[in-house]
Image 1 (cartoon, rainbow, N blue to C red):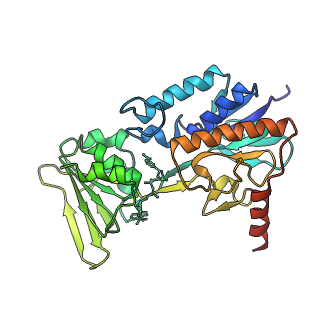
Image 2: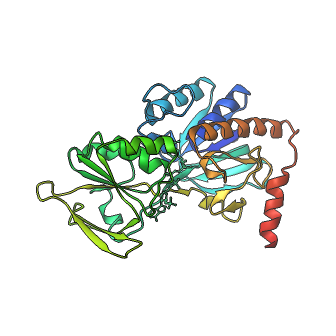
Image 3: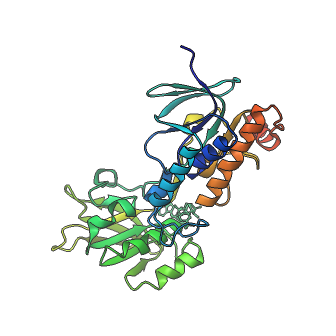
Length: 329
Ligand code: NAP
């Protein structure tokens, strides 16, 4: 049996991949989304999205994703849950090998996004799901009336700290500097919240516990002083949520697509260094990683895929020259 050749293979079903599928569908391209786990990417672990135009008041990430998924279905995009383990991108027909099957396409849109970076201290890995978490929406409820610590000072850390005040009796943000990275409007919410405290200039150096998180060592980076924080006897445990940035999901494309610090380099029209291969969303090197910019990238990538298939695509100058730089450096 001849295998179906899709017009567009989209790797990842976050806002970038879903928007690409929507625009591909509207252009009457056949599109297959390949998603390794569940729809939505990082926004499924986001408690509230209030900066995407048209999102409902206090809308959760999962709610927004559910509507996006429905919309892509209306325009005919197919989807398979599979993990891509090999990418053969250089020929006219691109081939992706998954754990469950192989997929062929005329173009590929890489929308693989990024995943949370671990805090990076001893004891962390053993205590994931036993006090240590990277998802406030998923795990906040476990810490009802307990103490909660949030590590990080970016948008995610501060926003999720505010959300976690619904559960914890106190939420302490541990940040390695003495000012937050988060945008001012998010900071203001945290500073105004009486349940939120701060440990400035501090990093977590160890997490300990026998089956459940019981103690944490925090070091002041200016004085070198170390403080051991122990769970209240009555509580037995506390929560530590790590929001210290993202790691791009790009290892599949090492030596294939041009990248810097793991983020794929594209031109303004989402072209990578390989013709017919586009990148969209948080996986790209870019200045603003938001749902709205991911969605915009996805739309552009799909329209460029359409142009490429029609044979009218312009040569990808910036990404191609970046590739030359990389090869010659
Ligand atoms: P981020 O902006 O990279 O911030 C990471 C934070 O973790 C920074 O405060 C950083 O400290 C700290 N950090 C990094 N490595 C650390 C380590 N090893 N130990 C302790 N602290 C460490 O990451 P993010 O907050 O996850 O945001 C990712 C992207 O999503 C950003 O572009 C952000 O704007 C976007 N985002 C937007 C929204 C929104 O608009 N509502 C919500 C969430 C995320 P330093 O500040 O000292 O570097």
